Length: 279
Image 1 (cartoon, rainbow, N blue to C red):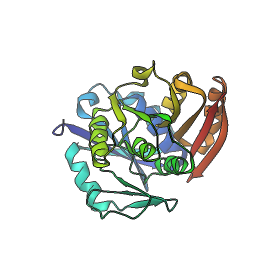
Image 2 (image 1 turned 60 degrees about the horizontal axis):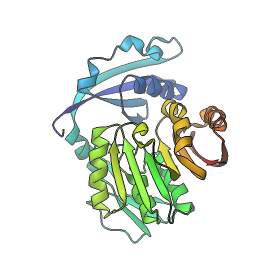
Image 3 (image 1 turned 60 degrees about the vertical axis):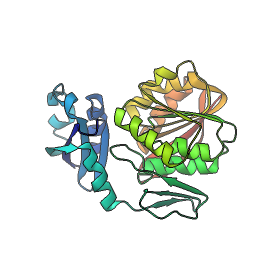
């Protein structure tokens, strides 16, 4: 696995909003599974073994006269991502309580000191969606809770939930690289209660949880919100992020179909994180 290749597509998008959001949604449907926002667009990553099945004519926004989009692409060895990341990564601090740092950084004196090495996985806390989720975890009580982290990426949210007292934790991601990376980060943080799964959320269909995190993207959240509801215990909490503020009502409308109502929200740079309770 470490020697396999990703292909990186650097897209320049004008206008950025909502162009980047639409582009990410359409690329996700074609197998692109990692994205990085840039000043002039996005970088999108896809496994080279999947790329041959991608038809770029299916990316509707590329043919839209409402947007000016250009791109170039190149191969990226998965292990090279870590070198690039290490050269730019700085620790982040959330709510004066949690530090997220790399293995090569000095241990902090924060109450929650998380050691995360992301490689090709999403979730260092630098992106607004992850930092907002972390902020909710810091605010809420997780003692003796059963937790599921959907689209776990680096495993960062499950790791923090265990440190906050969760009694049992499942973390799942469809990407093998994320699965392996989460296993590594769990070891780094001496986590003992987290079980990692590779695959779709349907793998956990017979389980029930007090709290569920899903920091993915709008299309996946809309598709799977009915599953999250089935997995949640009555009175359980669902935390959703990975979407823009303007799409909040779409998610709330879908959530209301499954007896879930809004109890809180956070916003940062047009990104939104919402907190729902199941009645």
